[in-house]
Length: 446
Image (spheres, rainbow, N blue to C red):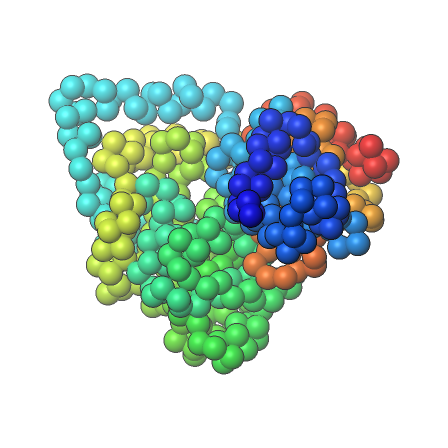
């Protein structure tokens, strides 16, 4: 009997070649089995394999449909997973004049004598200049990390991986908001970790949900995004941060605090969780959003006495930062380039949110005026994957809500009728046209 995987390979080839397009409905399994001359159980395994590969999605009561793109692993948020003309999956902001600003900072590094040193190696702890520069960059409110607690990764994703590898053994449980950064799901799978979804509200992670999950089966760590949570834009307030700090201290749990979008919040009232629980919190941040994704550095601030453990994880994973990137970061921070880019991107994010408010007026859209993304609960009867396919037919790529979901509220639950719009990458006129088109699609079903 033909192996079910070879049958799935042929269906996958049809999808890749465009013979089956986004939103196309596959025949019911019993019809598929009859046409192929295979057992119904084999047909079920074929469909299951296509779902596993992210090529199709099952809609209860409606059938199985070809996805717009295989995005549930989170790849769409890290690299180009689509050739759509308007990509609202990727989310890397760029300010006017950015290349010129960055080039000016890099010019001194290109002198042969400087370049020789800048292309050498660097330890996980970076250089004294990098530690001082990063500590100043990350300082906010009444919090400034101690330079000797800073480690450096190639990017923030690698800093997350290093922290998880240092804190959690394979098979260990990590608490996360039930909607989370998709690449954390991928990192956890590669490290052999179990993600435990935790309930949230309009202030972010609920302390009672964290405690209940830990009582049920102990957690090894918690990963949270308290500043402009991706995808919902929720920012945890001061009182909730204090409650979470108290709870993790009581439970003895380490926390990985992802602050990659925090630069958009400004200084006022934006103290990290680490300010309240420094002995338990690993802070992750980076330059990819502030500066550019192609030449970036990730930051990992560790609790006192835990740096060597995390540094070892970064080294063993091959996740430490390159020396040239460190030297570039020091210069961009020191000459004010990063500060100018941050200011420009704050204004840009606000302007793009005004476009969302204008063109998606009347829809259930959750967003923060400071954020570069929006969480859209689609009107009935839309489902996320069907809407993603419809948007793709208009040349627009968006991310389905289930890509962010950790539990069963994904494909068939609370995220099933939501999409995330990444606002940063498309030029504003193109973004405006895309939002108008998406609004028309949502209203008319066309």
